[in-house]
Image 1 (cartoon, rainbow, N blue to C red):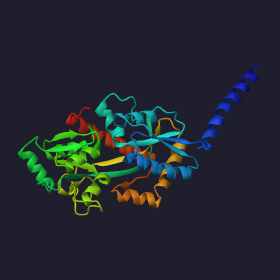
Image 2: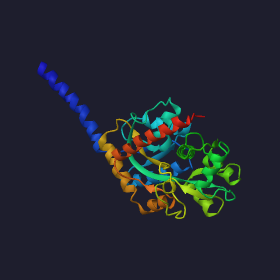
Image 3: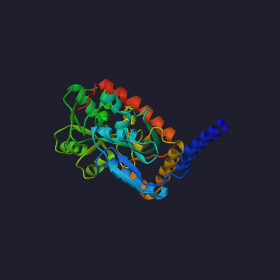
Length: 324
């Protein structure tokens, strides 16, 4: 009797293990949900749809993009973190909700370090410091001199508290030893529009967003936050080359999954994303916007997130930035 019971338990155990292993080896066998923590029409949404379309062909399953905006990207990122770790809910992990918001908000209902598994970096993109074309400031040195002569009078716009627009300016302030006034708007485009109207002094903006106005001479580019100059703006210096090497900002995003997603599935998604990033049309689109193409391993993306979290946590604390 005891022997029969042991055999029964063994059969049950095998019954539980075999379907699970089979499900992983058969992955994916149904549509995948792709969560974007920002609204439709923005940069994160556009790139998510582009990468999802390429990966869908590679994985031979539909990938359904679902926008869940709000709370600085926290709502959508929390949704990913709390989803079933089966590979059928993935999403875009962005700069702010992955590396800034834990320190900024202090009460997140997810932890980027313990609740999320990185899959792969998709891209990194520098910001460019721009002023109104009628501005008297033509160089970073001009701005620093004016800010030191009259502390707290120069202004910089942003798309909201805690985003890369503001954090770039705060990092610049801390390294240049100056004090400016932050003017947050409801979106980056609103902040840029007010800059072109002459209502604020400057803005650190994403290259893809600022380039059309720079080309149309509605904005003057002053410096770029990458280590080296951009091929799109060969005459514009990097902060590093003019004496501010720590003012390096690359707004990034990459694929993430819930913690506990099997390694075999993470590796499969990583391989599919790396293959998608080889697509010449997608590569040209990313490069034309001034971005660096990502790729690599989950471990490399995890290391980037960790180093960025450490860096921006210090900036937020030093500047005493509080959420809206």
